[in-house]
Amino acid sequence: MTTVKEMSTDEAMTQLSRLHEWTGSGRETVLGPHMLALVDWVDSKVVEFALQAGASELPVPRLIDRSVLERAGYFESFPATVEESNGGFMPSATCYHCYAKLAATSLREPGVWTCSARCRRNESQEEWGRLQTFTMREIVFVGSAAWVRKQRQEWIDRIVAFAQSLHLVVQLDTATDSFFAGGEARGRKLLQQIKGLKFELRAQMHAYGTPLAISSFNLHETFFSRRFNFQLADGIETHSGCVAFGLERWALALALTLGPDQAFSLVEQEKR
Amino acid sequence: MSDARDKLLNYINGELLTDPTRRAVPDTPLFEDGWIDSLKILKLIAYIELMIGRNIPDEEIVMKNFRTVTVIVEHFESK
Image (tube, rainbow over all chains, first blue to last red; front, side, top):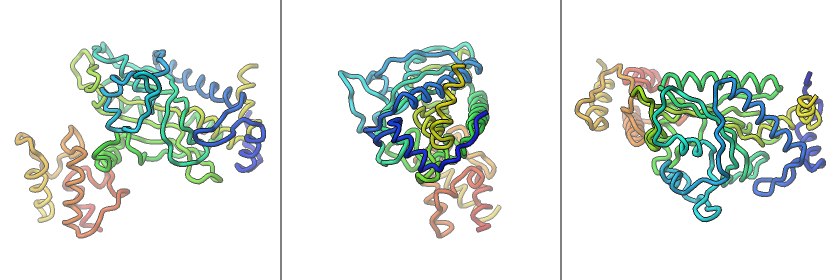
């Protein structure tokens, strides 16, 4: 059984650096083999949850086309996005890949999908865990408004319980950043806040300032179903929602909370 | 009906709701079915701030204080 580490968060961070398992910060962060294995372990657990919840796995390409992002209104939200190569972009969230796959489809029934992709954000804060390039696993659900809201609540309950079972000290907060930023950013943020469209699960790592967001639970209302023209065949207004996991952040939260040895042993226990 | 509730309803129906088929009553849920969008919420907050004579901090702008005109007036009159 996993027990909580006896070292402080500072000591855990120092040990992680000394082991070359988490070196540098922001753009330059490099993860060692044990941290990468821990990232994969967290991902495998999330995929298990997703498959149990009836999700289909969607393979996605490394980059996403400009046309998809334009359709999603992406450049209205993130105008400074850097093109990777000839019309290919690394998006700030994995779920755009999913909407591209669902585009112009008629769904016989509500559905759940999961995919994982490398993402990029221009993080301004030089804080542990805020990587510019990172791996995001997402679960996307599409259905009626009530069904999507129920799905989100079930995922909140499932993931909070999972985090607590790993001894992470977490809190669920209304998110302060807008999922769809843009010209009316404050209005959108306030609307999002009033409607409770976005919650973040934050892990407390006291020595390093504000708790780090490791997952988010989002409702998009009809934003993406309209933009990508996917709908339920029965004519009910089609809503979507998603749950996102910043996998490197989860691994860091585990390593700092449990201590590196205990965190890495989670992977080893799985192999036995 | 209180003066404040009348004033706020008149503002919402006269200035914010451009669709003539939509008319809010005191207990209309304002944030369902797209009645209030991201521009209208800024106008609504600015109007309430003028009514009450103070700025409203963002953390006070939550559903339990803004669900309907009745709720808004009760919340800000009690402050």
